Length: 96
Image (cartoon, rainbow, N blue to C red; front, top):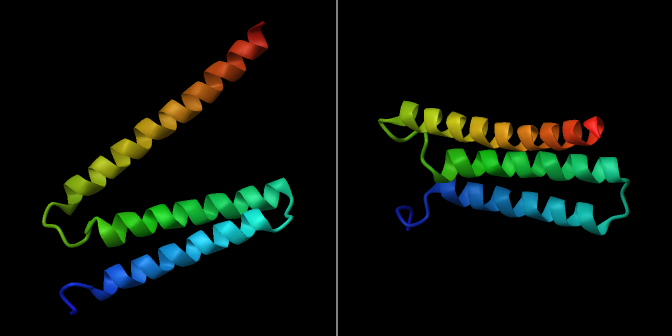
């Protein structure tokens, strides 16, 4: 049974459920926009980190350096796309 359900995967799944529950409670309670968005962003980032390191086996692979570089490149491309779009739309609005 331990081979089918490794302890790291079970703990990652339970933490994922807990963080999803925290996000759901945040949405259901009447919080201010800033507090609600802060809690949602933190839970999303922690959950993404858990999934990367517990479910993708980043530390267990012999080529973990390649996986880290791929993750950093994906983050770079995502952030450049998001902030580039925001900058372009805001700058374009300011020029008019």
